[in-house]
Image (cartoon, rainbow, N blue to C red):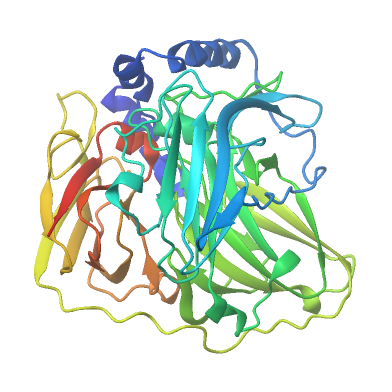
Length: 489
């Protein structure tokens, strides 16, 4: 399967609709591993070419599942211990059909791990697949050995324990596969789940909690008529079914009161631009946790791996009201107001001050772009594709740096985003202008439109070793848009 540049040019206009363009990931994946994905992809392509993609029979006919909270298998010495399998399971994603997916557990998403700020957790994953897997806790501040480096894999039949110190403020994180060349397919097929760090300081704010604190993972997919999940690396824009917590256009019954929705874009390539039938939402958090104050929004843009938390107050809507959360490409989720009830939660005018930032002593420039005409198609950072044997930059532990990141792909109109491992960052400006209030908090992933430049500032504390920075359009990182930094004493 060969990707030609003229295909990118022809499809460039789709980027503005939140769609990234096709890549030839599978050839490199098969060459790198020689394992299961090749035969699986061949089956997918036969299914996709022989029958039309399935869509929901009608929208809003299935309830949205809430990911179950994983209980520790033990707690001792101030540490919580968890265990999760990595395996293939059959799930009823589409009504009346079974779909084979990859799972950290039992569904098209993993269970939610609710950790506590300041209390370590150890999670042991056992790989029941016939191919390599691993786990990256996205947004976490961890030792290099626990970061889920793409070349640091769990062999089939083996297990691996990751230690998460949780020495960071409350935030919505997520865990997902990060095996190089397979990350896009593995995440697309279901290796993803929420990891929430609960901060006791947040309880004092009396935000909606318990059953009124709801994680929502947004993804998209293509299904064959028999329910087969189709992974077509040449056409990642052709994934017409929008999913909320692994179900197509579901509904969620709510009371007439306030809810905290933790929205994660868990897709590999789609940018979601969300609205709620014109109703106002209050954004209270981004990737790294609470903002300084609520930000009223009527639209919310989240690129792959970004998180945005909003509070929606349904008390202004009578019982029987139905509000639809929609992307620009179609409806995603319907909220049905079905009852009244006492609401003791509160949305304060001030949330949490931003952490202090140090004085930057180093400034760096990074350019994201596709290879020029005449060269094999690959995605690059500063003109180079990923090489796990090469250290691209060295950073002295404890220093603060400013990075200037530019998206060069203006001719093709390809968006990218930028994810930094180990350290959360602050967005300083976009093309010289201050960031919007919703992304002025602490982040680990930022969208960069074609021709745009974003400056970020980060401090690299505590740990040494090799970590990554890359585009989180995972088809792009799989084709080389990834680099390696080494934190040195």
